[in-house]
Length: 103
Length: 387
Ligand code: HEM
Ligand code: FES
Image (cartoon, rainbow over all chains, first blue to last red; front, side):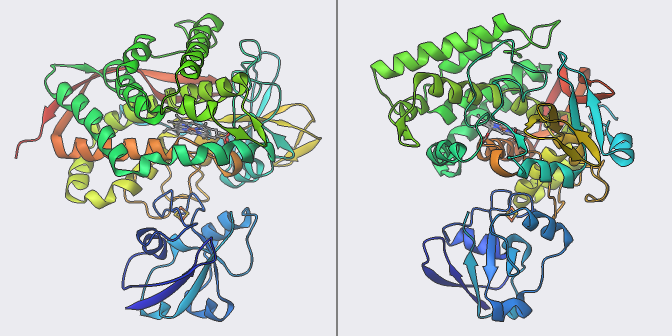
């Protein structure tokens, strides 16, 4: 089990648990405001953009090239940006905090 | 066996130059072909605008057949955002379960009916009917209204021998005018009523603006859905194993829809007008000339997609631009995705084989490129799955 904390687009903090699937799916199932997941998680829509807490970057890891190319054109991109459909849930993610990026 | 293939017509030009050229009514277009370049230009709305003269960003240009500005399509930021913020929630209704149930009943009806025929002409008898009936759900108006739209035939803007037909387009414009007046006199729960009741950017919408939204909803969602549905039927006719794969893995359907959209790219390209002298792929683009963002070419870019010319239904990373990219990304995408998802799920449940009996390809002519985008007609025999 991994506990993941989201700070949604209304700045509300919500912690949820899961052991598999993608972080985007987890967010959508739990109605996290600001994560739409329009493309179902294939890295085509960028409606699942989060900023990873600086101290959690090691646990979450960096975006690959295809994801980078999507993020590069997002107005709210920063060094902590990830498209969370590309983050798979595992024990390793336990305790991370993800802030939904503004639109 | 290769009847359902949509070849990549842009490969050579994309690899050698990154652009293509097409003439159109003395207003030539530089087509942008690579995925990264298409995304960059779509993102850069200041240099490549949509808010040009109404009709100019469409290819072939519609400047000679309409004056109404299509909204939000032909509006740039920041005004664009006001319109999107107003209508986005409406176009997210397809996520609701009773909306999906209505779509399912429309789709199941058409499939059940098709299973009883010796032969079905899929464009007119299946895709057009499905598209029209589903649009009544999107607009939240009575189902019966779809009979009139089906009667307009496969093309609202085109006739047999010409790509642009002002008289045919006028039928749609007059119809929408009349519907706006009718709704204004008697407000209901439809999209027309929402628009009549709303303010955007601090002002009530004018009738011309409401018309601009409604025309776009009719035009943008017609050929695109018809192409997507018809191509899907053709594809599964030739790949019964894929239909079985879907029947066994229903969870796969949403990523399968993304892959079908990538491969079919039902909208080939869309234009922009340069606001300054600039360049794409080292080719000069002069101010006040047109480029186009070629979604169909970008979606086969071998630098991004492995086996770009194969349909890989469970493709997991699929950064396609079939629904556009950035500011003007498709407003109807939620509706289209649900519709296609329910369609392929129901086909997998109910149909064992579909056999193509005859077909007439619809090949678009873009100067140096000839692109098959779908079918003018497709005759198919549907056979039920036996349990
Ligand atoms: C499979 C079906 C569809 C495909 C492939 C598709 C494709 C696209 C693409 C590529 C764009 C971007 C155009 C641009 O950047 O200039 C777009 C925009 C748009 N589409 Fe779709 N479309 C589909 C279905 C629909 C439907 C069903 C509707 C509505 C009934 C619709 C309404 C719109 C509108 C209103 C826009 C403009 C949005 C804006 O400017 O903000 N589309 N579509
Ligand atoms: S859900 Fe579409 S890019 Fe992540």
